[in-house]
Amino acid sequence: MGSLARSPCERQNRILQSRPCTRTMPDYVVRPAFQEDIRWVRPLYAYWVTTSAYSFETEPPSPEEMVMRWANVVSAGLPYVVATPAADPSRVLGYAYATPFRDRAAYAGTVETSVYVAPGHERRGIGKALMLHLLRELVEIGTRQAVAVIGDSANRGSIRLHEWAGYRVSGQLLGVGHKFGRDVDVVLMQRGFAPPKPGSSHQAIVTYVV
Image (cartoon, rainbow, N blue to C red; front, side, top):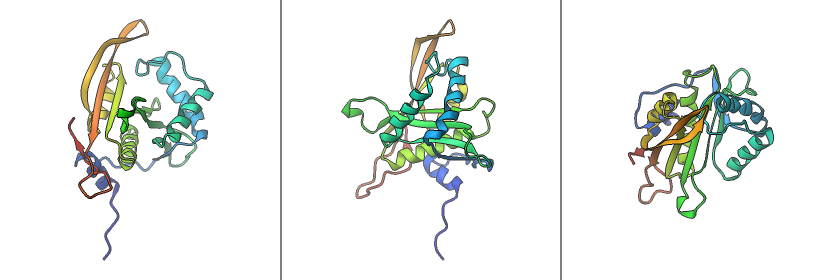
């Protein structure tokens, strides 16, 4: 008898080192983002820009700027994914993407990751599903390190999500931002990926503590 395809839970356990499995809810799917999705992504991001210190931008980017950012990610061969309702895949409930951490050559293989969930859709597993999909794609392209730069040390939801996904706090920058009349910290979190085994052309889908 042929081997059975791995279930979503089995795939998650391989990536997150046998953490408790969270099944993708049947009412949404995670897929690659296309240019037309940006009309949903922009107002989602604009909400967090204008109501929180999670983003250090103070004005929402224009539609043209958001499209350019999406294009820069995908043209670099990095993942940009969205969560959409299964019944209406044209809407966006959340999105996640990776960008090069820095431009200089020695940073190759290290990315910065970002995850945003639409207001009113938090705590439904969407952030975890986006994160899991993003990490799986990063493994497939040979990423060495993933860094999250989290705005506001009070952003416990984002910090807990990253801890669930295997990130660890690697530092904190105190008061480097100023928004809504107060100083805002930045929490730096980091996750490594195991290097390929000798003789293998594929990177292992496990983590090590950095």
